[in-house]
Image (tube, rainbow, N blue to C red; front, side, top):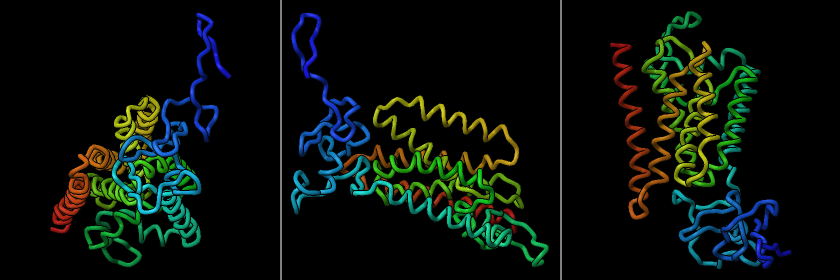
Length: 296
């Protein structure tokens, strides 16, 4: 149905997303020419494609042998842009159930600790004693229902958009490096016998990456900035929160995401892999220095 302007002349209705008819859009799929909204548009080498064309389903899918479309960061577009997010969420929930079953024993074995004496075993434990795995296992460890609930809600809200924009492997690298960044700053600045756990470092990395992505896509950044400000206020207001993990994850997530979405196409792999390698090297060096300080 056509609308009329002030002169009484008919003008066509604005296009609406074929998957979400309630959303107006001015973007169409470069393959099938159907209108798509921002949620459905998938970046291609030129323009955007719709989910059905990306999946290569019946009718308008890309032809066999054609180059597969790429995400904004150069990753392969997947049919399920939530797969890695689902796996990460499942691991966190599985470990939480294991904690409920095993109790403090599992927490003591996997939580982030720099250097502490365990009276139960009369031995020193922690990262400084060679238990480097704690820097990553602690990021999948939760004790309280509210803690895992808030973190998993944020993961489910932020993760799929980043996974779709970066691609599965780049998104996974971002998540794990953010977790390591949070543990590293905790190791450097927190008390050596302070125990910390939770996915908050990785989640704050997703916050930072989402802000970078929204700026890159020129979206309205006010919602993510307000949410980030609220979370930072909570971090520095309430006691018992490992602010080091939050801040470390936020910085690493923003840096890695910036490299991934702003890397020039002709040097994309070099910039992206190089940035991840430099961040990982920085983690190793910082932890080696702190370890030498604690046991020296």
